[in-house]
Image (tube, rainbow, N blue to C red):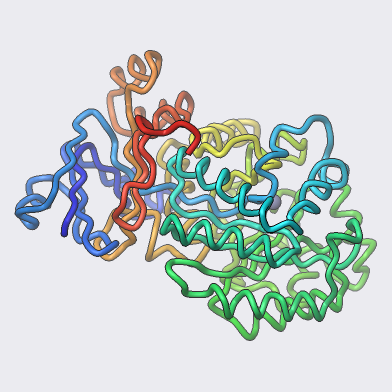
Length: 435
Ligand SMILES: [Zn+2]
């Protein structure tokens, strides 16, 4: 059975950091056809409808149909400590994050938060996430079970952490290895699920544990590695103290076999020229987390500079250090951070980072983040007139980029009319109460 969504259609023809606004393929009357969980075709409505006679057609003439958003770095266990006041990174971890993560020893708590988490991501049009869990394997089981129940594509991993955190959250090198191996055996490739190798960040792992993580990375080249890099200046000084043999922060990961194309580094704000060059050479990716960076006072990432250096970059919320599940809020913050650095990201660049950029960071650039034949049947239906102000502003837009920018600045979950995943509608705003 084939399902067609018809409306204004946003697709991607390239990377706007390389080819500018020509990267945006926009059909004023477009359509995307879903069959067997994949996209059968996408483009001008006439052609798609003619190719799929007899399909069920959902027409949304006043809406924008876009690839479901991808969030390439966030922490589902922090869903309910979002919006915690007054601390920078290390203090914030100790005061808010670690006490909350300790509760994930309880599988029922983990399951309840996983349910609430996916209700929020889908309410905000996010189709694919890559999440940290906690050091408890049951936190990963709860996340994966909920993603599987909803039929979503998702990536997540057990946090590896064997020092500088409360004892209840610590594992050790051997347990980190064994528990991650077991999770990979249980969840990798089940539905659309993938397991990430997830050392929290260099300061909370001993060199022995980073070696174990590197061994996992070598044994499972298809599993992404996710961690944090160069977020906060106090953190960077701490890393230099803990790893005096390393040339810089990135070199700690490099020495332990954790720097490779399928590695996603959250933040990467205060990099040296050597680190930037090495990131590009290794083909690793940066998850830019602008609401988190502003909220925790971490600094302003040089996204345009990283892209110009050849580093892959995607956009991410970093909830709960980040302040919103909404990709609109994240795009707006990325714009503001670009402004503060003297290089405003364009509307097309912002939307690309929240779709193909984030998907590419996860090694999923041929699966999600675009509406193209063979991609997952994941899409978001966006109401261009969700609020009076948004309606007035988008009505004045003289081109698609202007409408996209208005959405990024003024939009929120009220603009997400529907979210589709695997060819099924998994969120409809008209029906939603609390997910
Ligand atoms: Zn993070």
